[in-house]
Image (cartoon, rainbow, N blue to C red):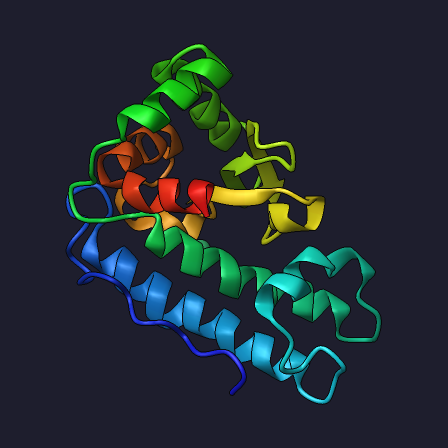
Length: 199
Ligand code: MN
């Protein structure tokens, strides 16, 4: 195996009541593990085997060969889920004064930013993700992407992601996607998000 499923940084029930233990367990052991296995299988025997994950994601539009779609979908699934878990921590933590100021400067306010992010997530048709990203010039932007696409392919650095595929919330929230989206703020690991910004 080239890429390994990383350990979850907390227990399955650690994000309760916002994300339930059963959803976490299935999401991690079935979906994320599935993407990881399929990503490795798709890479096998190609020139992209043993390449750095960031380089693969950044160059995803330029890959060649019959496995390109499988690498794109499963590689994105592998990388994006790693990020999604790392972006969260039980009960969340505080945004720093620095980052609060940065969000006010970029979006006009923390709640304005949150509303933009929620809207990006709620209006993404079908499956995909909402993101807070850092552009090449250092500015912050809210975007959404379909399926398992990743902003690295657009030259942006992903800071915060929200998985809005139904497998991420349907057991607990069913059709209430907006409730899942707004509840997720309770478990955001801002220290980790900011480390990505500063990195
Ligand atoms: Mn997912």
